[in-house]
Amino acid sequence: MIDLKVLRENPDLVRNSQKVRGEDVAIVDQLIAADGIARSAISDFETIRAEQNVLSKSVGAAKGDEKAAILEKAKELAGRVKAADAKRAEAEAKANELALKIANIIDPLAPVGGEADFVVIEEIGTPRDFTKDGFEPKDHVEIGKIIKAIDTERGAKVAGSRSYYLTGPGAMLEFALVNYAIASATKAGFIPVIPPVLVKPHAMEGTGFLGQAAENVYHLEEDDVYLVGTSEVPLAAFHMDEILENLPIRYAGYSSCFRREAGTYGKDTRGIIRVHQFDKVEMFSYVKLEDAAAEHLRLLEWEKDFLKAMEIPFRVIDVASGDLGASAIRKFDCEAWIPTQGTYREVTSTSNCTEFQSRRLNIRYRDENGTKPVATLNGTLVAIPRMIVAILENHQNSDGSVNVPAALRPFLGVDKLVVA
RNA sequence: GGAGGAUUCGCAUAGCGGCCGAGUGCGCACGCUUGGAAAGCGUGUAUAGGGCAACCUAUCGAGGGUUCAAAUCCCUCAUCCUCCGCCA
Image (cartoon, rainbow, N blue to C red):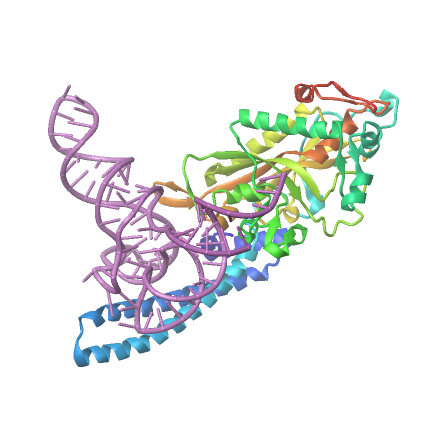
């Protein structure tokens, strides 16, 4: 939810934000109108209500004819209060519904444009020259078979398309990645968390996943709960309706993530780049608004550190306005080099959601002037399947075996994943 | 799944249909007292919206209802606790 004060005082800012995101601009003016109506309805209701309260209080003291007269007037007033209250509730609901549809106000620093208009901030590491190494790189599906780490065929047999088994070294690789991630996050001051992955509608809505992203979310009809697509959801809703102290607060959540991947038919159908279920370690920060931009860069640094430790060439991009989620004002993606695709692919991502989620979820902190919404930020530390793809493809040998990056060896116990 | 009990201000509790936005204790803040501390005494201490302000409005788990008036009465739902059943 955006700040309605900003909307009232600077509607152009909101209009422009919607425009560069490629979202509905007209809704801004609809909201301004609805907000005006709601505010005057509130004021009308409060005036009549105050009158009623005064009159009601006088009933007890009054006697005889006087009392009868007051009661009669009070009765009439009660009817008007009820009507005004109904009008107020309706106007507020309408304004609120519109307000929830408007995306967070974009950071002016974010590049303007669509998916292709990202700006490359930096490239780290150099893609490996396989010609020099004297062999054609195999893709992760092939390597996964050779070392018996990934089984997509049985995944499809049992669970349908975009499903997979991690077996043997694949499973061990997940444990090693998770343990390395949690160990480094803990060292950096994050509190490790294993959150629920089934959440109620309010948590989903509060984090902004029931708007444009709704079609990618699994919903369990029978119980009206959602399967989260990221632990960002339960980590944000963790402090719902609370007033926080001692900011910043940082959590590292480890959970399964579920995505319907509707509308991606034909995209990344091979392998485990795009799947319905995967595990992920997610960083989540609660900070003061004025610290949000700096925290965003810190999250990015932790992501970069992770990829560097995995010895994978990657680049960082500043995602363009049209490609941002509703909650984010700015987003950086880290994209790993995938040799068999000859391109960089997103492996981690960090978003600054400022007060958008905290306003919906009612999460505040206290300062000298009262309470204020906190800012929330999230960033992927490691999304398992994509990291496995990057590791297998970048560190493969000609026979299909895979060298383990030094940082992972203590967690995996071996230097090399060998041909099975 | 079945049977009971609970849900009030950070915590613990009191609360008669109007004098209850709500008392008390603890905690916290400030002041007095003291050589210093503890104790003691005094004052303050929920959130949100509106107004320059006095102040007004809303909120006693949530939503409905009865009433001139609801923390208090009625209905529905949620959550927690205890017991029984089932179960990783």
